Image 1 (cartoon, protein in one colour):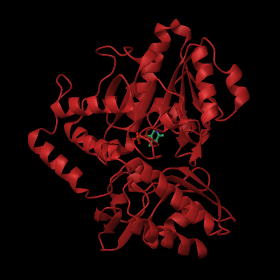
Image 2 (tube, rainbow, N blue to C red; image 1 turned 90 degrees about the vertical axis):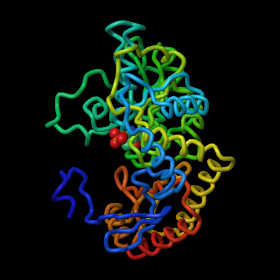
Image 3 (cartoon, rainbow, N blue to C red; image 1 turned 180 degrees about the vertical axis):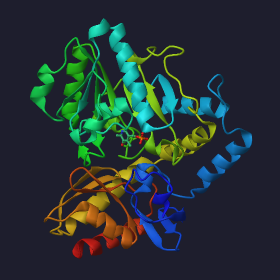
Image 4 (cartoon, rainbow, N blue to C red; image 1 turned 45 degrees about the vertical axis):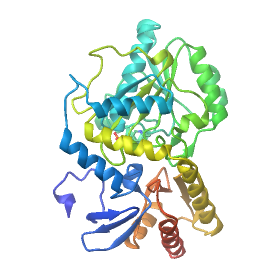
Length: 389
Ligand SMILES: *Cc1c(COP(=O)(O)O)cnc(C)c1O
């Protein structure tokens, strides 16, 4: 239907949504779906969450866009509260995850130049990582399938190391290394969790070589894993964190937070974007942040995730293998010669929204405030569908 009108880069399904409520969505035929996808980990407070809707409506009446020659009051408030909540010293607002990572890459390059000249240019990322679709973030992405010959030449100065490889970090970093960029839980790569001890050791080695450490928290950030930032939980204290997806509950917003050696690297004119810090997105971001700060909210994300993982594992369905994740970022390996994509399609037909990741993994990233009833309704669809896969 829509795929005839918009370039079909997404392999989209023929389902047209009209509205939703919480973690329940409805298509144009009135069919109901339980939302275990949240617009790919974006709708952190679900659909039609009243405080979010009202904040955006109110902001729309005040101002929708100003340009970055000036600042908006709501932008200042959001930046202040974000920095206070996360313990960072500076922030750059962009509009997407790819743009956040572009900003991180540019900051790392300038940092390298200021602290080692022309030769300190290399940015390490992890094998199997995903960092975006722009030329630089695509190059940074540690998966060969994202590097077809027809997009070449790619951007220079990127190398990869394997996550959780202790030998690699002993020799990888030197005076040519500008930064190490860690995706804390590889979302697109199959919900693979980076080991906390390894991440800390890798960060130490990179810093010893004079590099800064950055975390791609585009998917893991802002409550998804049950912490404000997943890097807090892993404990490697990045100098730069990129964020996007869930930060503004569905409005386009992305960017980077920075501190320590990464603070004061960007100067006026180094990096900009026309839409950056959009007041509507900032107003929405404040609602999301306040929700995450409510006592028990992040704890409930962890509990719900654990409950879902335990439930799925307890079925011992022969079509499923490893069930893993952090908070409400869950991966279920599909085995027995069955396909995760086939499962995703059948789930869609049966009224459950999910997605796939990695080689053959079902990815579950529901709204963070999904109700117990919606979780159980979704799980029962998943259970039945797995039985007939
Ligand atoms: C989605 C994602 C991106 C890209 O974000 P866009 O908003 O699509 O540009 C980058 N990194 C990670 C880890 C992501 O999950």
